[in-house]
Length: 314
Image (cartoon, rainbow, N blue to C red; front, top):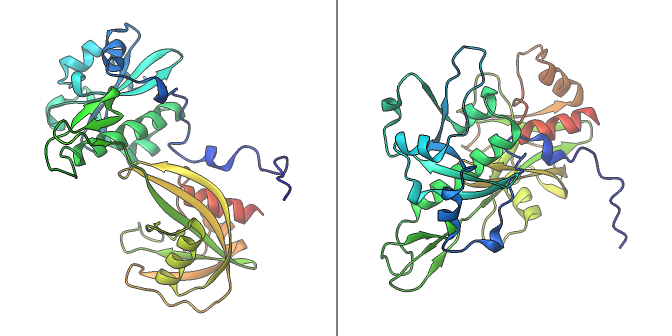
Protein backbone atom coordinates (compact mmCIF):
# COMPACT_ATOMS: atom_id res chain seq x y z
CA UNK A 1 0.00 0.00 0.00
CA UNK A 2 1.48 3.33 -1.08
CA UNK A 3 1.21 6.16 1.44
CA UNK A 4 0.71 9.51 -0.28
CA UNK A 5 1.48 12.61 1.78
CA UNK A 6 1.77 15.24 -0.97
CA UNK A 7 -1.99 15.21 -1.58
CA UNK A 8 -2.84 16.07 2.03
CA UNK A 9 -4.42 19.52 2.46
CA UNK A 10 -2.47 22.53 3.68
CA UNK A 11 -2.86 24.01 6.15
CA UNK A 12 -3.52 20.89 8.17
CA UNK A 13 -7.28 20.89 8.92
CA UNK A 14 -6.74 20.34 12.65
CA UNK A 15 -4.72 23.57 12.82
CA UNK A 16 -7.85 25.53 11.86
CA UNK A 17 -9.74 24.53 15.01
CA UNK A 18 -9.74 26.35 18.34
CA UNK A 19 -7.46 25.16 21.17
CA UNK A 20 -5.18 23.46 18.59
CA UNK A 21 -2.26 25.91 18.42
CA UNK A 22 -0.20 24.57 21.31
CA UNK A 23 3.50 25.41 20.93
CA UNK A 24 4.51 24.45 24.47
CA UNK A 25 7.31 21.87 24.70
CA UNK A 26 5.95 19.43 27.27
CA UNK A 27 9.22 17.62 28.07
CA UNK A 28 7.25 14.57 29.19
CA UNK A 29 10.24 12.25 29.31
CA UNK A 30 12.36 14.71 31.32
CA UNK A 31 9.99 15.31 34.24
CA UNK A 32 10.98 14.26 37.74
CA UNK A 33 10.31 15.14 41.38
CA UNK A 34 12.28 18.40 41.08
CA UNK A 35 10.75 19.71 37.83
CA UNK A 36 8.08 21.90 39.42
CA UNK A 37 10.42 23.48 41.99
CA UNK A 38 12.96 24.23 39.28
CA UNK A 39 10.28 25.82 37.14
CA UNK A 40 8.92 28.08 39.88
CA UNK A 41 12.45 29.22 40.77
CA UNK A 42 13.08 30.33 37.19
CA UNK A 43 12.59 34.11 36.91
CA UNK A 44 11.17 33.61 33.39
CA UNK A 45 8.38 31.35 34.70
CA UNK A 46 4.87 32.55 33.88
CA UNK A 47 1.46 31.29 35.01
CA UNK A 48 -1.99 30.82 33.53
CA UNK A 49 -4.54 31.32 36.30
CA UNK A 50 -7.72 29.32 36.86
CA UNK A 51 -10.69 28.90 39.10
CA UNK A 52 -12.65 25.65 38.57
CA UNK A 53 -13.77 25.46 34.94
CA UNK A 54 -12.68 29.00 34.12
CA UNK A 55 -9.61 31.05 33.20
CA UNK A 56 -8.62 34.34 34.85
CA UNK A 57 -7.37 37.37 32.89
CA UNK A 58 -6.18 40.75 34.04
CA UNK A 59 -8.07 43.60 32.38
CA UNK A 60 -6.13 46.16 30.35
CA UNK A 61 -5.93 49.75 31.59
CA UNK A 62 -8.14 50.85 28.70
CA UNK A 63 -10.81 49.13 26.66
CA UNK A 64 -8.39 48.71 23.75
CA UNK A 65 -5.48 47.45 25.87
CA UNK A 66 -4.78 43.71 25.65
CA UNK A 67 -5.76 41.52 28.58
CA UNK A 68 -3.06 40.12 30.85
CA UNK A 69 -2.92 36.39 30.21
CA UNK A 70 0.36 35.39 31.85
CA UNK A 71 1.29 36.20 35.45
CA UNK A 72 4.51 35.94 37.43
CA UNK A 73 4.74 33.42 40.26
CA UNK A 74 4.62 36.30 42.74
CA UNK A 75 1.46 37.76 41.14
CA UNK A 76 -0.18 34.34 41.19
CA UNK A 77 0.63 33.86 44.87
CA UNK A 78 -0.80 37.27 45.79
CA UNK A 79 -4.09 36.29 44.13
CA UNK A 80 -4.28 33.04 46.11
CA UNK A 81 -2.47 30.75 43.70
CA UNK A 82 -1.63 27.26 44.93
CA UNK A 83 1.90 27.24 43.50
CA UNK A 84 2.94 24.01 45.21
CA UNK A 85 -0.07 22.29 43.57
CA UNK A 86 0.41 23.90 40.16
CA UNK A 87 0.82 22.01 36.90
CA UNK A 88 3.96 22.35 34.83
CA UNK A 89 2.58 22.53 31.30
CA UNK A 90 6.05 22.68 29.76
CA UNK A 91 8.26 25.40 28.29
CA UNK A 92 7.62 28.13 25.75
CA UNK A 93 10.87 29.46 24.22
CA UNK A 94 12.67 27.96 27.20
CA UNK A 95 10.46 29.70 29.80
CA UNK A 96 8.38 27.49 32.14
CA UNK A 97 4.61 27.71 31.86
CA UNK A 98 2.39 26.76 34.80
CA UNK A 99 -1.33 26.26 35.27
CA UNK A 100 -2.20 27.61 38.72
CA UNK A 101 -5.47 27.25 40.56
CA UNK A 102 -6.55 30.20 42.68
CA UNK A 103 -7.88 29.21 46.07
CA UNK A 104 -10.48 31.99 46.05
CA UNK A 105 -14.01 32.58 44.83
CA UNK A 106 -14.14 34.15 41.37
CA UNK A 107 -16.29 37.04 42.63
CA UNK A 108 -13.62 38.04 45.14
CA UNK A 109 -11.09 38.93 42.45
CA UNK A 110 -12.71 42.29 41.78
CA UNK A 111 -13.22 44.45 38.71
CA UNK A 112 -9.58 44.29 37.64
CA UNK A 113 -10.01 40.72 36.39
CA UNK A 114 -12.16 38.84 33.90
CA UNK A 115 -13.15 35.26 34.72
CA UNK A 116 -14.31 33.37 31.63
CA UNK A 117 -15.38 29.80 30.98
CA UNK A 118 -13.36 28.06 28.29
CA UNK A 119 -15.99 28.40 25.58
CA UNK A 120 -16.12 32.15 26.18
CA UNK A 121 -12.31 32.29 26.10
CA UNK A 122 -12.37 30.57 22.71
CA UNK A 123 -14.54 33.29 21.17
CA UNK A 124 -13.49 36.31 23.24
CA UNK A 125 -10.34 37.12 21.20
CA UNK A 126 -8.53 37.87 24.47
CA UNK A 127 -6.04 35.04 23.87
CA UNK A 128 -3.93 34.07 20.86
CA UNK A 129 -3.87 30.54 19.50
CA UNK A 130 -0.90 29.42 21.59
CA UNK A 131 -2.40 30.77 24.81
CA UNK A 132 -5.82 29.30 23.97
CA UNK A 133 -4.26 25.87 23.57
CA UNK A 134 -2.26 26.20 26.78
CA UNK A 135 -5.41 27.22 28.67
CA UNK A 136 -7.19 24.13 27.30
CA UNK A 137 -4.24 21.96 28.32
CA UNK A 138 -4.16 23.40 31.84
CA UNK A 139 -7.91 23.36 32.33
CA UNK A 140 -8.22 19.74 31.24
CA UNK A 141 -5.44 18.48 33.52
CA UNK A 142 -6.71 20.58 36.41
CA UNK A 143 -10.15 18.97 36.12
CA UNK A 144 -8.53 15.53 36.02
CA UNK A 145 -6.72 16.27 39.28
CA UNK A 146 -9.95 17.45 40.90
CA UNK A 147 -11.69 14.19 39.97
CA UNK A 148 -8.84 11.88 41.00
CA UNK A 149 -7.91 13.02 44.49
CA UNK A 150 -8.35 9.46 45.76
CA UNK A 151 -6.87 6.24 44.43
CA UNK A 152 -9.33 4.18 42.44
CA UNK A 153 -7.67 0.95 43.60
CA UNK A 154 -7.48 1.35 47.39
CA UNK A 155 -9.42 4.58 48.08
CA UNK A 156 -6.60 6.40 49.84
CA UNK A 157 -5.64 9.94 48.94
CA UNK A 158 -3.32 10.34 45.97
CA UNK A 159 -0.77 13.14 45.51
CA UNK A 160 0.39 15.09 42.42
CA UNK A 161 3.82 14.13 41.09
CA UNK A 162 6.31 15.14 38.36
CA UNK A 163 4.89 18.62 37.96
CA UNK A 164 1.25 17.55 37.97
CA UNK A 165 1.44 15.03 35.14
CA UNK A 166 0.91 12.07 37.43
CA UNK A 167 -0.75 11.23 40.74
CA UNK A 168 0.82 8.71 43.12
CA UNK A 169 -0.83 6.65 45.83
CA UNK A 170 1.60 6.13 48.72
CA UNK A 171 -0.64 3.45 50.24
CA UNK A 172 -0.76 0.89 47.40
CA UNK A 173 1.85 2.28 45.01
CA UNK A 174 -0.57 2.92 42.15
CA UNK A 175 0.20 5.67 39.64
CA UNK A 176 -2.47 7.58 37.76
CA UNK A 177 -1.96 9.58 34.56
CA UNK A 178 -4.13 12.28 32.94
CA UNK A 179 -6.76 10.93 30.58
CA UNK A 180 -8.24 12.15 27.33
CA UNK A 181 -11.72 11.02 26.31
CA UNK A 182 -12.09 10.37 22.55
CA UNK A 183 -15.24 11.75 20.92
CA UNK A 184 -16.23 11.22 17.30
CA UNK A 185 -17.88 14.12 15.51
CA UNK A 186 -19.03 13.39 11.99
CA UNK A 187 -20.59 14.91 8.93
CA UNK A 188 -22.71 12.33 7.14
CA UNK A 189 -22.76 12.83 3.36
CA UNK A 190 -25.25 11.60 0.78
CA UNK A 191 -24.13 12.88 -2.61
CA UNK A 192 -24.74 16.63 -2.69
CA UNK A 193 -26.38 16.84 0.71
CA UNK A 194 -25.28 16.37 4.31
CA UNK A 195 -26.94 15.49 7.60
CA UNK A 196 -27.17 18.08 10.38
CA UNK A 197 -29.01 17.82 13.67
CA UNK A 198 -30.33 20.14 16.30
CA UNK A 199 -29.96 19.51 20.04
CA UNK A 200 -32.50 21.11 22.41
CA UNK A 201 -29.75 23.14 24.12
CA UNK A 202 -28.48 24.73 20.88
CA UNK A 203 -28.98 28.45 20.22
CA UNK A 204 -32.04 29.26 18.07
CA UNK A 205 -31.67 28.18 14.45
CA UNK A 206 -28.40 26.34 15.00
CA UNK A 207 -27.80 22.96 13.30
CA UNK A 208 -24.58 20.99 13.69
CA UNK A 209 -22.85 17.69 13.07
CA UNK A 210 -23.64 14.65 15.18
CA UNK A 211 -21.18 13.49 17.85
CA UNK A 212 -20.67 10.98 20.63
CA UNK A 213 -18.09 9.29 22.85
CA UNK A 214 -16.05 6.35 21.60
CA UNK A 215 -16.93 3.31 23.72
CA UNK A 216 -14.46 0.72 25.08
CA UNK A 217 -13.47 -1.88 22.47
CA UNK A 218 -14.67 0.27 19.56
CA UNK A 219 -12.83 1.67 16.55
CA UNK A 220 -13.26 5.27 15.49
CA UNK A 221 -15.04 4.14 12.33
CA UNK A 222 -17.48 1.94 14.22
CA UNK A 223 -18.16 4.74 16.71
CA UNK A 224 -19.09 7.01 13.77
CA UNK A 225 -21.43 4.34 12.44
CA UNK A 226 -23.02 3.55 15.81
CA UNK A 227 -23.58 7.16 16.92
CA UNK A 228 -25.07 8.18 13.57
CA UNK A 229 -27.48 5.27 13.60
CA UNK A 230 -28.42 5.75 17.26
CA UNK A 231 -29.12 9.48 16.90
CA UNK A 232 -30.53 9.68 13.37
CA UNK A 233 -31.28 6.14 12.17
CA UNK A 234 -28.90 6.55 9.23
CA UNK A 235 -26.55 3.70 8.24
CA UNK A 236 -22.94 4.64 7.45
CA UNK A 237 -20.62 2.80 5.07
CA UNK A 238 -17.14 4.20 4.51
CA UNK A 239 -15.60 6.63 7.00
CA UNK A 240 -12.81 9.13 6.34
CA UNK A 241 -10.84 10.98 9.03
CA UNK A 242 -10.49 14.74 8.52
CA UNK A 243 -9.27 16.60 11.62
CA UNK A 244 -9.12 16.61 15.43
CA UNK A 245 -9.55 19.22 18.14
CA UNK A 246 -8.58 19.35 21.84
CA UNK A 247 -11.77 20.11 23.75
CA UNK A 248 -11.49 21.00 27.47
CA UNK A 249 -15.06 20.02 28.40
CA UNK A 250 -13.64 18.57 30.51
CA UNK A 251 -10.82 16.63 28.78
CA UNK A 252 -11.88 15.34 25.37
CA UNK A 253 -10.33 14.95 21.94
CA UNK A 254 -12.82 15.58 19.16
CA UNK A 255 -12.09 13.28 16.21
CA UNK A 256 -13.69 14.74 13.08
CA UNK A 257 -14.72 12.47 10.21
CA UNK A 258 -16.87 12.25 7.11
CA UNK A 259 -19.29 9.34 6.85
CA UNK A 260 -20.87 7.88 3.70
CA UNK A 261 -24.64 7.45 4.06
CA UNK A 262 -25.98 4.11 2.79
CA UNK A 263 -29.53 4.73 4.00
CA UNK A 264 -31.62 7.88 3.80
CA UNK A 265 -34.69 7.84 6.05
CA UNK A 266 -34.14 9.78 9.28
CA UNK A 267 -35.42 8.44 12.60
CA UNK A 268 -34.22 10.66 15.46
CA UNK A 269 -33.83 9.63 19.09
CA UNK A 270 -34.55 11.73 22.16
CA UNK A 271 -31.10 13.39 22.06
CA UNK A 272 -32.11 15.48 19.05
CA UNK A 273 -34.85 18.03 18.60
CA UNK A 274 -34.58 17.84 14.81
CA UNK A 275 -32.38 16.34 12.11
CA UNK A 276 -32.42 17.19 8.40
CA UNK A 277 -30.64 16.76 5.10
CA UNK A 278 -29.19 20.03 3.78
CA UNK A 279 -27.92 20.62 0.25
CA UNK A 280 -24.44 21.99 -0.35
CA UNK A 281 -25.93 25.31 -1.47
CA UNK A 282 -27.99 25.51 1.72
CA UNK A 283 -24.89 24.89 3.83
CA UNK A 284 -23.06 27.66 1.99
CA UNK A 285 -25.98 29.96 2.80
CA UNK A 286 -25.83 28.89 6.47
CA UNK A 287 -22.12 29.68 6.64
CA UNK A 288 -22.73 33.09 5.08
CA UNK A 289 -25.70 33.78 7.39
CA UNK A 290 -28.03 34.00 4.39
CA UNK A 291 -30.23 30.91 4.66
CA UNK A 292 -33.87 31.90 3.95
CA UNK A 293 -35.08 30.03 7.06
CA UNK A 294 -32.52 31.73 9.27
CA UNK A 295 -30.79 28.46 10.15
CA UNK A 296 -27.04 28.51 10.71
CA UNK A 297 -24.11 26.26 11.52
CA UNK A 298 -21.57 26.40 14.38
CA UNK A 299 -19.07 29.27 14.40
CA UNK A 300 -15.45 29.20 13.32
CA UNK A 301 -12.94 27.45 15.62
CA UNK A 302 -15.42 24.64 16.30
CA UNK A 303 -14.46 21.40 14.56
CA UNK A 304 -18.06 21.08 13.39
CA UNK A 305 -17.49 24.24 11.35
CA UNK A 306 -14.24 22.80 9.99
CA UNK A 307 -16.07 19.71 8.75
CA UNK A 308 -19.06 21.57 7.32
CA UNK A 309 -17.04 24.27 5.59
CA UNK A 310 -14.56 21.79 4.09
CA UNK A 311 -17.43 19.84 2.55
CA UNK A 312 -19.29 22.96 1.40
CA UNK A 313 -16.21 24.26 -0.40
CA UNK A 314 -15.63 20.91 -2.08
